[in-house]
Length: 462
Image (tube, rainbow, N blue to C red; front, side, top):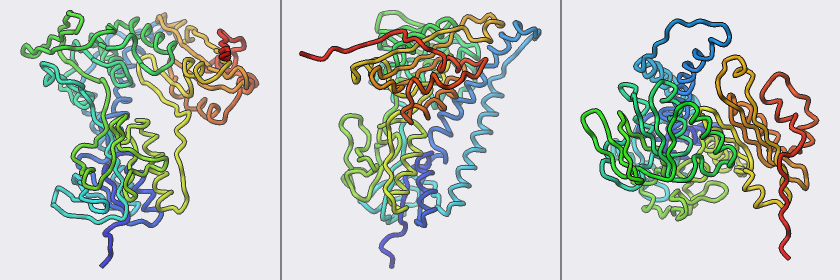
């Protein structure tokens, strides 16, 4: 009798777990993957993909408004929330089926059950109480919305999960949070016509982003009529039939039809049986503690993606899953480089960023040059919309290397994806300058900014 039923057991059918399962199977491993909900995980089912579909849909109203400046007369427009939800659900079902098919084609076996670790080589399937012996176990259970400390009326609050399935579009919504998810949904609901109020505890939104980006996004969102209240939190939520009153820590209150919290996500580590195998938790972030090869404190157990709470981005989970499979089953060690990871916020306006912020660069380098510009995009010159684009390069003043790029405006994410290649290759500002501009585009500003808008020199300590 074989010592193990499978070579690899993956807990979690999200993007990272699926990639690991497929690559490992391609290397000849016997693979089983357990998913208790739907294949595709957060990103496909209730995250990036449906969110981006909502963002695209919410842009249509702006496009219609802008059309008049280009000679179009559109007599009337209407929007049906139910149609949006139905079409989104259809697309997500298609993607889920594709994920399932691709895993099965690779030779891996899918089981629809929650998997709980019994020991360093055993997973119990709760669906039928079956025990599977695996040479290696990979935990890829992702993260979940975190509502924070309990407050009166917390049961009335929705998360991004429920926002994708609302029966009707709220006329008024209060959103607590100042990061990716909060701002993306603020733009979505505002685009569809809701009155939106954002509540954030800090002094400004997008904590951790470049300060110019934070200020620019806030200004642009407020121009669109979104109310942003900082320096306060939600203290209590009262329900009155179909309406809510949100009481803030500053003593004020807001009436709305929905209250949504998007204050962060926590790693899905509960009730996985980690303690049965002695898998350690990182005390700093609450995720599973892993090394550079995604190995946990137990040699046979690995973890990737949001459950480790390192860099909570889908492409990072996919890269980590691929690297794990190559390392363990492909007979070659692959370590993921987590430096200079590009990221986007699909707020309105959109944000794309890669590399260091100005603050981070000035803390690490003695000479830092800043190249920054804001300008009215060509479309706005005809539409009349009051909006501006921000583009910023952070450069090492000693070596001329581009340390960071920050963009706010239409297609910021698309531009940043390409710029990220240059930043990863350690391109210099001279390389950018030597590139002929592609005109007329917004992105040409990245290769035409010649004069620093600021130069920072840190004096050495005596």
